[in-house]
Amino acid sequence: NAGVTQTPKFRVLKTGQSMTLLCAQDMNHEYMYWYRQDPGMGLRLIHYSVGEGTTAKGEVPDGYNVSRLKKQNFLLGLESAAPSQTSVYFCASSSQANEKLFFGSGTQLSVL
Amino acid sequence: RKEVEQDPGPFNVPEGATVAFNCTYSNSASQSFFWYRQDCRKEPKLLMSVYSSGNEDGRFTAQLNRASQYISLLIRDSKLSDSATYLCVVFPMIGGYNKLIFGAGTRLAVHP
Image 1: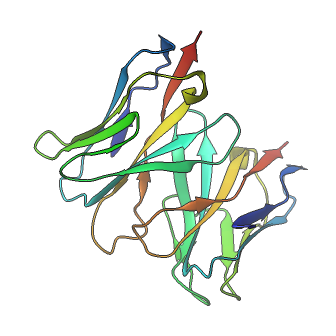
Image 2: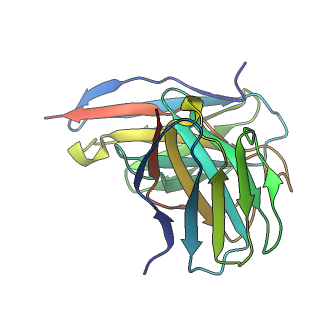
């Protein structure tokens, strides 16, 4: 009964380093999303995907890249981390665009 | 003006109290509305959808006022376990899968 699994749960980076966050879902959902959550600002959409092989920009895409090579996986990459990318990142998936979102447990990222 | 606005709180209420939160949205074409609950340092989870006619789930009642562009959440007989942040979520338009908008949340603290 895994649902949506995110790895890693915590990470500390130095400015300029790169990393990839992995999101995996086992519900056969078409839609997958990456959000970031900052204090007082709510969840903001970074990138999303409406199916295998597709990706699109959300509200705050700069500094991030994504890939959806397999339906069950959605990767979020930071090529050159900046302190402004310190945040909590949540992956989510859904069966339809306006249906219930299932979230992963989050990744706390700190960029020093 | 933010697309979705919520009073951040915190709302501090005793057990057994009734408490209500409002959430206003700016896009009159918004089609779907939800309330999510988020516990501290955890992922958001769907509490309930909000239907045009209003809907109830146990102690929780959600209402939509399209004319004034707000949704509300009423919690009756508050429990200690209701302490959490409540996120208002609005889906602005049909097919706009990239625009699921989250409010910043209203924090509720229920005390003995």
